[in-house]
Image (cartoon, rainbow, N blue to C red; front, side, top):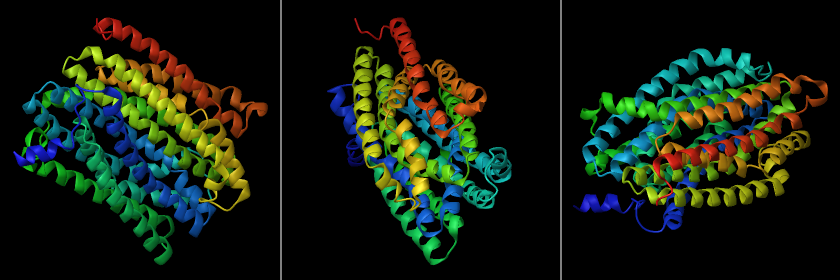
Length: 456
């Protein structure tokens, strides 16, 4: 009983009590966790930018879009695990929860092995297709091969953290990432400054730190009592749970992959402007990442709270959850995004001392960070829809509203000399966020009427 009580102190009652307060209790540790996870890559970029040079900075930064492309597909499946565990936990079905936990962890291992094969074998060719400048191609290839050699740990951590989030536990993943983040920073300094390993050093540091995070989250699940307890002997793919996770997570995977494809195309366009713009975009992209993950905490909150309440048939609370999450994400996006712009030049100097790179980065910050709350609103709508079990619809809407529009712009007007500038490339982001958000609102209204979300 003492173990059960210990577990419960990390849980949040999502189906009773005040929504906004509980949502913030859930989101704030998750926000901090996401920021720590992002610091892995930030530490890489800062160390190579300050102690190796702009070429190494561009080499590490140019990999971001490709890494997201290859990993988002499988990370999307962890959303399916989160939703399914939330549904069963909210409905009070411990046996079904247990089967979902073991199926999810085994899926994470399989996903990691597949990603290692794809990343190590094909990433160099994809980097060339992305028009990665020849001056940074060897270093970029070295970084990505080392990164994907240890990607299984990243997958295990993401699936394990998704399981813990499903019951409202966002604090322990925060603790584990803090430990892993400290390891990452220490190893960065040792490998890059002490051992002179350049980008290979930061890749090794990131890989080792992710292994630390994965070990800690697996240890947590193995020491848990009740439905979340992980036992290695019980690891197997339950056919029913596997299909349910795929049904919910696969559309999310495709959506993440499609967004990444559009970002890869945009990155290829950025690469065509040369090293200065690539380095400026890399540094600015890293800064805007902190804004994004802060907002993404409310996407996760909307997803998990909606899933549990839908599983418990507390339909009348779902509208209130969505409104609370939308207000929270808008405030977060406006506050954080404009703060980054206000201090933009000083923040960019953390990454580079080049004035030209800083000015190139400020162009991206203006057009992405300031209106970034629109992206938060869009994602939060998606979280609510997926929490209700609708995953295909937001995938299709996101495909048309964001990816297709961006790609059309790049292959039509952007090719004209008058529009062929970084400014006109970045402006596709806020425009497509707004269009997609409005389309998701329409979808939610339709679904709400269908399942009686209004709560009569």
